[in-house]
Length: 341
Ligand SMILES: *Cc1c(COP(=O)(O)O)cnc(C)c1O
Image (cartoon, rainbow, N blue to C red; front, side):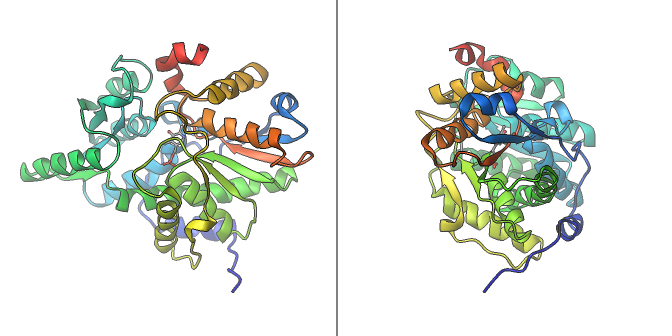
Protein backbone atom coordinates (compact mmCIF):
# COMPACT_ATOMS: atom_id res chain seq x y z
CA UNK A 1 0.00 0.00 0.00
CA UNK A 2 1.32 3.43 -0.89
CA UNK A 3 1.59 5.87 2.01
CA UNK A 4 -0.43 9.07 1.80
CA UNK A 5 1.58 12.28 1.48
CA UNK A 6 0.89 15.26 3.74
CA UNK A 7 1.64 18.93 3.06
CA UNK A 8 4.27 20.81 5.06
CA UNK A 9 1.52 22.94 6.58
CA UNK A 10 -0.40 19.87 7.69
CA UNK A 11 2.70 18.48 9.46
CA UNK A 12 3.24 21.83 11.18
CA UNK A 13 -0.41 21.93 12.27
CA UNK A 14 -0.16 18.48 13.81
CA UNK A 15 3.04 19.39 15.66
CA UNK A 16 1.39 22.56 16.99
CA UNK A 17 -1.14 20.41 18.87
CA UNK A 18 1.66 19.17 21.16
CA UNK A 19 2.98 21.19 24.12
CA UNK A 20 5.77 23.44 22.88
CA UNK A 21 7.75 26.48 23.98
CA UNK A 22 9.23 28.87 21.37
CA UNK A 23 13.05 28.83 21.57
CA UNK A 24 14.51 28.39 18.07
CA UNK A 25 15.28 30.99 15.42
CA UNK A 26 13.62 29.35 12.42
CA UNK A 27 13.60 28.92 9.52
CA UNK A 28 17.36 28.45 9.51
CA UNK A 29 19.34 29.43 6.38
CA UNK A 30 19.88 27.01 3.50
CA UNK A 31 23.08 27.68 1.59
CA UNK A 32 25.17 26.22 -1.22
CA UNK A 33 28.84 25.40 -0.56
CA UNK A 34 30.47 25.72 -4.01
CA UNK A 35 34.12 26.03 -2.86
CA UNK A 36 33.85 23.00 -0.60
CA UNK A 37 32.08 21.02 -3.36
CA UNK A 38 34.91 21.92 -5.77
CA UNK A 39 37.42 20.41 -3.34
CA UNK A 40 35.68 17.03 -3.04
CA UNK A 41 34.29 16.14 -6.48
CA UNK A 42 31.76 16.90 -9.21
CA UNK A 43 28.75 17.45 -6.96
CA UNK A 44 26.68 20.31 -5.58
CA UNK A 45 26.60 20.54 -1.79
CA UNK A 46 23.95 22.38 0.23
CA UNK A 47 23.86 22.96 3.98
CA UNK A 48 20.86 23.41 6.26
CA UNK A 49 22.20 25.73 8.93
CA UNK A 50 20.71 24.23 12.08
CA UNK A 51 23.87 25.40 13.80
CA UNK A 52 22.07 28.78 13.59
CA UNK A 53 18.95 27.97 15.65
CA UNK A 54 19.87 30.84 17.95
CA UNK A 55 19.74 29.83 21.59
CA UNK A 56 23.24 29.86 23.16
CA UNK A 57 25.18 28.78 20.01
CA UNK A 58 22.21 26.83 18.59
CA UNK A 59 22.19 23.33 17.12
CA UNK A 60 19.60 20.57 16.74
CA UNK A 61 18.93 20.48 20.50
CA UNK A 62 17.20 23.87 20.31
CA UNK A 63 14.52 22.38 18.05
CA UNK A 64 14.35 19.33 20.35
CA UNK A 65 14.02 21.53 23.46
CA UNK A 66 10.91 23.28 22.16
CA UNK A 67 8.99 20.02 22.55
CA UNK A 68 10.89 18.52 25.51
CA UNK A 69 10.67 21.61 27.68
CA UNK A 70 7.13 22.16 26.38
CA UNK A 71 6.31 18.69 27.71
CA UNK A 72 8.03 19.49 31.04
CA UNK A 73 6.17 22.80 31.46
CA UNK A 74 2.82 21.19 30.58
CA UNK A 75 3.42 18.60 33.33
CA UNK A 76 4.14 21.35 35.86
CA UNK A 77 7.86 20.50 36.28
CA UNK A 78 10.01 22.81 38.43
CA UNK A 79 13.37 21.06 37.98
CA UNK A 80 14.96 19.37 34.96
CA UNK A 81 17.21 16.33 35.50
CA UNK A 82 19.44 15.80 32.48
CA UNK A 83 22.88 14.56 31.56
CA UNK A 84 25.23 13.08 28.96
CA UNK A 85 28.92 13.67 28.16
CA UNK A 86 31.00 16.45 29.70
CA UNK A 87 30.93 18.37 26.40
CA UNK A 88 27.25 17.63 25.76
CA UNK A 89 25.43 20.02 23.42
CA UNK A 90 22.17 18.53 24.62
CA UNK A 91 22.94 19.60 28.21
CA UNK A 92 24.20 23.06 27.21
CA UNK A 93 21.02 23.83 25.26
CA UNK A 94 18.75 22.34 27.93
CA UNK A 95 20.51 24.46 30.57
CA UNK A 96 20.00 27.52 28.35
CA UNK A 97 16.31 26.73 27.82
CA UNK A 98 15.89 26.28 31.60
CA UNK A 99 17.41 29.72 32.20
CA UNK A 100 14.91 31.22 29.73
CA UNK A 101 11.98 29.42 31.33
CA UNK A 102 12.99 29.96 34.96
CA UNK A 103 13.46 26.24 35.67
CA UNK A 104 16.18 24.73 37.81
CA UNK A 105 18.54 22.57 35.73
CA UNK A 106 20.55 19.68 37.18
CA UNK A 107 23.13 18.07 34.92
CA UNK A 108 24.87 14.72 35.54
CA UNK A 109 27.82 14.45 33.19
CA UNK A 110 29.71 11.24 32.48
CA UNK A 111 33.36 11.68 33.48
CA UNK A 112 34.67 9.11 30.99
CA UNK A 113 33.79 11.22 27.94
CA UNK A 114 36.25 14.12 28.10
CA UNK A 115 38.67 16.06 30.31
CA UNK A 116 36.83 18.09 32.97
CA UNK A 117 38.34 21.42 31.92
CA UNK A 118 35.79 24.24 32.13
CA UNK A 119 35.70 25.06 28.44
CA UNK A 120 33.27 24.85 25.52
CA UNK A 121 29.87 23.46 26.47
CA UNK A 122 30.79 22.86 30.12
CA UNK A 123 31.74 26.52 30.53
CA UNK A 124 28.38 27.54 29.07
CA UNK A 125 26.50 25.15 31.41
CA UNK A 126 28.01 26.98 34.36
CA UNK A 127 27.43 30.44 32.90
CA UNK A 128 23.69 29.89 32.42
CA UNK A 129 23.36 28.66 35.99
CA UNK A 130 22.98 24.87 35.71
CA UNK A 131 23.93 22.72 38.73
CA UNK A 132 26.60 20.43 37.34
CA UNK A 133 27.81 17.15 38.80
CA UNK A 134 30.41 14.87 37.22
CA UNK A 135 29.59 11.18 37.70
CA UNK A 136 31.30 7.86 37.02
CA UNK A 137 28.27 6.33 35.25
CA UNK A 138 28.82 5.57 31.57
CA UNK A 139 26.71 7.12 28.79
CA UNK A 140 23.46 5.19 28.21
CA UNK A 141 21.62 2.92 30.68
CA UNK A 142 24.06 3.55 33.60
CA UNK A 143 23.50 7.29 33.35
CA UNK A 144 19.73 6.90 32.91
CA UNK A 145 19.71 5.06 36.26
CA UNK A 146 21.35 8.14 37.84
CA UNK A 147 18.58 10.37 36.45
CA UNK A 148 15.93 8.01 37.82
CA UNK A 149 17.53 7.99 41.27
CA UNK A 150 18.00 11.78 41.39
CA UNK A 151 14.46 12.40 40.15
CA UNK A 152 13.09 10.04 42.81
CA UNK A 153 15.00 11.94 45.53
CA UNK A 154 13.65 15.28 44.30
CA UNK A 155 10.13 13.91 44.18
CA UNK A 156 10.42 12.64 47.75
CA UNK A 157 11.46 16.17 48.73
CA UNK A 158 8.26 17.59 47.22
CA UNK A 159 9.72 18.79 43.91
CA UNK A 160 8.36 18.14 40.41
CA UNK A 161 11.27 16.78 38.39
CA UNK A 162 11.23 16.16 34.62
CA UNK A 163 14.02 13.82 33.62
CA UNK A 164 15.68 12.56 30.45
CA UNK A 165 13.77 9.35 29.81
CA UNK A 166 14.43 8.03 26.28
CA UNK A 167 10.97 6.47 25.86
CA UNK A 168 9.39 9.86 26.45
CA UNK A 169 12.03 12.35 25.26
CA UNK A 170 13.28 10.75 22.02
CA UNK A 171 9.93 10.70 20.15
CA UNK A 172 9.26 14.32 21.14
CA UNK A 173 12.71 15.35 19.92
CA UNK A 174 11.98 13.49 16.67
CA UNK A 175 8.76 15.47 16.24
CA UNK A 176 10.85 18.65 16.08
CA UNK A 177 12.74 17.16 13.13
CA UNK A 178 9.53 16.23 11.34
CA UNK A 179 8.81 19.97 11.45
CA UNK A 180 12.40 20.66 10.33
CA UNK A 181 11.93 18.22 7.42
CA UNK A 182 8.96 20.30 6.25
CA UNK A 183 11.17 23.40 6.36
CA UNK A 184 14.02 21.62 4.57
CA UNK A 185 11.76 20.20 1.85
CA UNK A 186 10.67 23.79 1.08
CA UNK A 187 14.35 24.89 0.94
CA UNK A 188 15.29 22.05 -1.40
CA UNK A 189 12.36 22.77 -3.69
CA UNK A 190 13.25 26.45 -3.88
CA UNK A 191 16.84 25.51 -4.80
CA UNK A 192 15.44 23.42 -7.65
CA UNK A 193 17.46 20.27 -6.88
CA UNK A 194 16.66 16.68 -6.04
CA UNK A 195 19.37 15.50 -3.65
CA UNK A 196 20.91 12.03 -3.90
CA UNK A 197 20.97 12.00 -0.09
CA UNK A 198 20.51 14.13 3.01
CA UNK A 199 23.37 13.65 5.50
CA UNK A 200 22.91 14.16 9.21
CA UNK A 201 24.81 13.20 12.32
CA UNK A 202 22.43 11.05 14.31
CA UNK A 203 22.20 7.82 16.27
CA UNK A 204 18.72 8.64 17.53
CA UNK A 205 15.93 11.19 17.19
CA UNK A 206 17.18 13.73 14.65
CA UNK A 207 17.65 11.24 11.81
CA UNK A 208 14.47 9.39 12.81
CA UNK A 209 12.46 12.62 12.71
CA UNK A 210 13.92 13.73 9.38
CA UNK A 211 13.26 10.32 7.84
CA UNK A 212 9.67 10.34 9.11
CA UNK A 213 9.15 13.89 7.89
CA UNK A 214 10.40 13.12 4.38
CA UNK A 215 8.28 9.97 4.23
CA UNK A 216 5.18 11.84 5.44
CA UNK A 217 5.81 14.53 2.81
CA UNK A 218 6.14 11.87 0.12
CA UNK A 219 9.78 12.82 -0.60
CA UNK A 220 12.07 9.96 -1.61
CA UNK A 221 15.39 11.64 -0.75
CA UNK A 222 17.19 9.18 1.54
CA UNK A 223 18.16 10.53 4.96
CA UNK A 224 21.57 9.08 5.75
CA UNK A 225 22.16 9.08 9.51
CA UNK A 226 25.84 8.96 10.41
CA UNK A 227 26.53 7.41 13.82
CA UNK A 228 28.84 8.85 16.47
CA UNK A 229 28.55 6.35 19.33
CA UNK A 230 28.22 2.58 19.81
CA UNK A 231 25.08 2.18 21.87
CA UNK A 232 24.47 -1.16 23.60
CA UNK A 233 21.41 -1.67 21.37
CA UNK A 234 20.69 -2.00 17.66
CA UNK A 235 20.52 1.59 16.41
CA UNK A 236 18.28 1.13 13.30
CA UNK A 237 15.79 -0.82 15.46
CA UNK A 238 15.68 1.97 18.05
CA UNK A 239 15.55 4.72 15.39
CA UNK A 240 12.62 2.97 13.69
CA UNK A 241 10.89 2.70 17.05
CA UNK A 242 11.56 6.40 17.69
CA UNK A 243 10.16 7.38 14.26
CA UNK A 244 7.07 5.22 14.85
CA UNK A 245 6.48 6.70 18.31
CA UNK A 246 6.80 10.20 16.81
CA UNK A 247 4.32 9.21 14.06
CA UNK A 248 1.91 8.19 16.79
CA UNK A 249 2.32 11.52 18.62
CA UNK A 250 1.52 13.29 15.33
CA UNK A 251 -1.27 10.87 14.46
CA UNK A 252 0.47 9.99 11.16
CA UNK A 253 -0.11 6.61 9.48
CA UNK A 254 3.52 6.14 8.38
CA UNK A 255 5.69 3.45 9.96
CA UNK A 256 9.31 2.31 9.62
CA UNK A 257 11.04 -1.02 9.75
CA UNK A 258 14.70 -1.00 10.87
CA UNK A 259 15.73 -1.84 7.27
CA UNK A 260 14.23 1.48 6.09
CA UNK A 261 16.54 3.48 8.38
CA UNK A 262 19.72 4.42 6.49
CA UNK A 263 22.26 4.31 9.29
CA UNK A 264 26.00 3.89 9.10
CA UNK A 265 28.48 3.33 11.91
CA UNK A 266 31.50 3.55 9.57
CA UNK A 267 32.65 6.87 11.02
CA UNK A 268 32.48 6.07 14.72
CA UNK A 269 36.09 4.93 14.91
CA UNK A 270 37.78 4.39 18.26
CA UNK A 271 35.35 5.88 20.69
CA UNK A 272 32.65 8.42 21.42
CA UNK A 273 33.97 11.91 21.91
CA UNK A 274 37.21 11.44 19.98
CA UNK A 275 37.90 13.24 16.73
CA UNK A 276 38.65 10.77 13.92
CA UNK A 277 41.28 11.46 11.21
CA UNK A 278 38.53 11.59 8.55
CA UNK A 279 36.56 13.95 10.78
CA UNK A 280 39.56 16.20 11.17
CA UNK A 281 40.06 16.33 7.39
CA UNK A 282 36.37 17.17 6.91
CA UNK A 283 36.51 19.96 9.51
CA UNK A 284 39.63 21.48 7.95
CA UNK A 285 38.29 21.29 4.40
CA UNK A 286 35.01 22.97 5.30
CA UNK A 287 36.59 25.63 7.51
CA UNK A 288 39.28 26.54 5.00
CA UNK A 289 36.97 26.57 1.95
CA UNK A 290 33.77 28.08 3.41
CA UNK A 291 34.65 29.36 6.91
CA UNK A 292 32.04 26.92 8.22
CA UNK A 293 32.85 25.25 11.53
CA UNK A 294 32.18 21.58 12.28
CA UNK A 295 32.17 20.13 15.78
CA UNK A 296 34.64 17.32 16.56
CA UNK A 297 32.16 14.68 17.77
CA UNK A 298 29.07 14.82 15.54
CA UNK A 299 29.08 16.97 12.43
CA UNK A 300 32.71 16.21 11.50
CA UNK A 301 31.68 12.55 11.18
CA UNK A 302 28.64 13.34 9.05
CA UNK A 303 30.69 15.41 6.61
CA UNK A 304 33.46 12.77 6.60
CA UNK A 305 30.83 10.26 5.41
CA UNK A 306 29.54 12.68 2.78
CA UNK A 307 33.09 13.15 1.46
CA UNK A 308 33.75 9.38 1.48
CA UNK A 309 30.51 8.75 -0.47
CA UNK A 310 31.38 11.38 -3.09
CA UNK A 311 34.91 10.02 -3.50
CA UNK A 312 33.73 6.41 -3.77
CA UNK A 313 31.07 7.28 -6.36
CA UNK A 314 28.25 6.19 -4.08
CA UNK A 315 27.01 9.73 -4.65
CA UNK A 316 27.07 9.88 -8.47
CA UNK A 317 28.99 12.70 -10.16
CA UNK A 318 26.67 15.52 -11.18
CA UNK A 319 24.25 15.03 -8.27
CA UNK A 320 23.42 17.24 -5.31
CA UNK A 321 23.70 16.38 -1.61
CA UNK A 322 22.42 18.11 1.51
CA UNK A 323 24.19 18.26 4.85
CA UNK A 324 22.07 19.12 7.88
CA UNK A 325 24.43 20.98 10.23
CA UNK A 326 23.28 20.02 13.73
CA UNK A 327 25.60 22.47 15.52
CA UNK A 328 27.87 21.56 18.42
CA UNK A 329 30.40 24.25 17.59
CA UNK A 330 31.24 25.35 21.19
CA UNK A 331 33.02 21.99 21.56
CA UNK A 332 35.83 23.14 19.23
CA UNK A 333 37.23 25.23 22.09
CA UNK A 334 37.45 22.17 24.33
CA UNK A 335 39.10 20.15 21.54
CA UNK A 336 41.63 22.74 20.36
CA UNK A 337 44.60 20.36 20.25
CA UNK A 338 42.72 17.52 18.56
CA UNK A 339 41.17 19.91 16.04
CA UNK A 340 44.60 21.14 14.97
CA UNK A 341 45.92 17.55 14.93
C1 LIG B 1 23.04 15.55 19.80
C2 LIG B 1 23.71 15.92 18.52
C3 LIG B 1 23.52 15.15 17.36
C4 LIG B 1 22.75 13.85 17.32
O1 LIG B 1 21.46 13.91 17.73
P1 LIG B 1 20.58 12.57 17.84
O2 LIG B 1 19.79 12.79 19.08
O3 LIG B 1 21.46 11.40 17.89
O4 LIG B 1 19.74 12.55 16.66
C5 LIG B 1 24.13 15.56 16.20
N1 LIG B 1 24.88 16.67 16.16
C6 LIG B 1 25.09 17.45 17.24
C7 LIG B 1 25.96 18.63 17.12
C8 LIG B 1 24.49 17.09 18.45
O5 LIG B 1 24.70 17.86 19.53
